Amino acid sequence: MSRRNPGPRRMRGQSMVELLIAAPVVFFLILMVVQAVLLYRMKSTLDYAALMTARAGAVTGLHRDKMRQAFAKGMMPLYAHKTGMVEMELAYAKARADLLVHGRITVINPTRAAWDEFRERQYDGAYALPNDSLAYRDATVGSSGVNVQDANLLKVKVEYDAPLVVPFVGWVLGGRSQYLKAGTFESPPVSRLTGRLPIESYAIVRMQVPVRDRGNLDR
Image (tube, rainbow, N blue to C red; front, side, top):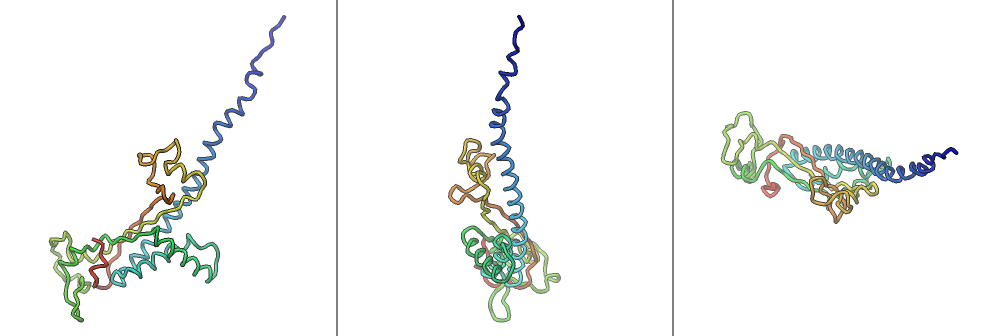
């Protein structure tokens, strides 16, 4: 009598088990790719907004409200989903409201120490960081660590808390799963309160007008 081969019967259902094991991982990787593309778009928009913010500060003497307006205008593409003036105005309003909580502007240079060292009295009697005739001014580095030419290089950092809108991705990256723990090297600094990932960008331009208000400097 010949024995029947039990192999195929034992292998029955194995592919289903493998699919159930691999499918969640593959599905999550696909979601991660989608979220990465969205984050890349946000970072590219933030880079442009940083340049607009720095340019607004350079021509207004670091007027903070003008810089915030430029920041919101630069971030408008993330809030506009249609064309038309009404949609643009609505996107600008959304950007201003959102960036009040999830956006930050920091003036890295010039510093208050540089302003105190190189300030000069202007035609109206007020003090300001001079911006004229920089090519003919003394280039000696002062106690603030820069010379007057370098003090007129405006360096701005803008930060934006990017929303993780793809399902499950923010939950995992925020450390609320068994895969990544919050505060570890592998886990990004996703806020547990907002579920957003902070990203930042820098821009450097030359000042076009004197800096009159020392209070507009952050450090």
